[in-house]
Image 1 (cartoon, rainbow, N blue to C red):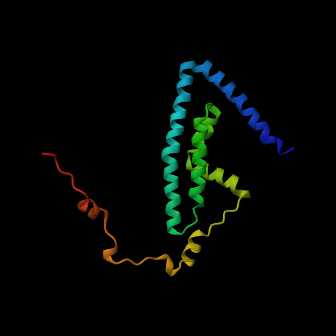
Image 2: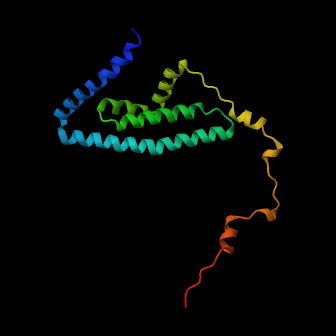
Image 3: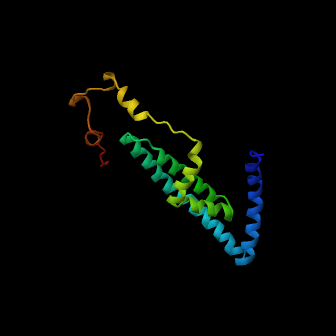
Length: 161
């Protein structure tokens, strides 16, 4: 009986969204309803673009520090879900998406959904311990040059007389 509950929820969502559209459209008018849906889509795209990038930066910082990036991955994943829910037309999905933009709600959602998950991360320590001497190349100053040196010594254009 338990596996049927998610299926029923997925089937009920479009029906509830249509009912919500009808109710809100009757209360505030069709044009305002359409404008709210368009505004939610624009907000969803902006969330995916800006908040998603900041989550990836946090993941990168955690990896560079040698720390497990669990919080950054969870935040990034839930922000992407929030952006997608805002892009999907519907007021119920927009409400869930807006709630997921609140950091406290994201932490609560992560705690609820991560109970059955195990995150194993050992990349940084493995990377440090498996370095070999052959992984490094020793160059003398004559073997390389800076990009600004190359631009000054490159071909020069002359004006035709």
